[in-house]
Image 1 (cartoon, rainbow, N blue to C red):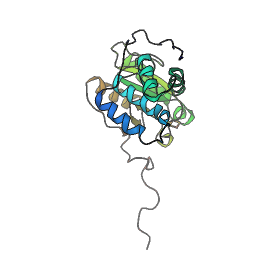
Image 2 (image 1 turned 45 degrees about the vertical axis):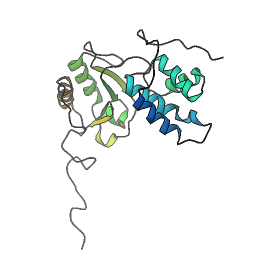
Image 3 (image 1 turned 30 degrees about the horizontal axis):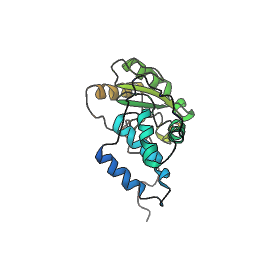
Image 4 (image 1 turned 180 degrees about the vertical axis):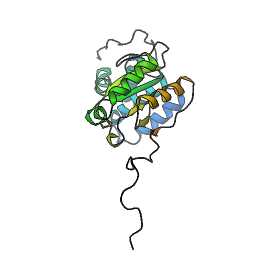
Length: 202
Ligand code: FES
């Protein structure tokens, strides 16, 4: 017998299922694992459910548990361990702001301030228009382009108070701001331009 888990969100759907398209993707993912090891696809399932629904309701947890032949509490354990899985609704744009030392030293407080000024949302909050949810996260591995923010699946780097606001305004306007370094440098090249290997050695 499986234990029922208390839903976390106020507006939980009573029933939930993958779309036919997503179910086909899921079945293909399960086939990558040896017979009887379908539970290994649990994180893939949770991510897929989140991409379909925007967050992962309890009904989706139970649907996934049924497909993978797992106890719902086991799926819940995975969902609650990974901060990338959201058990409550989040805004259309999830702003994951890195506040770890390199980003902090390079001005992450200015980024938090820009977000608050432009969206009205602080850390852990969703803007009144439902567009933006703000999270503070630890190092996202882009320290060389600090400070940075992950917005949904994209990294925005070399941020300042000003260019962060420009990005948010574009998102509000329904535009797609270009991800990556906002300073004009190419990927992780030196911020002031190349200093070495400027010519081909003879
Ligand atoms: S400290 Fe921010 S990306 Fe590493």
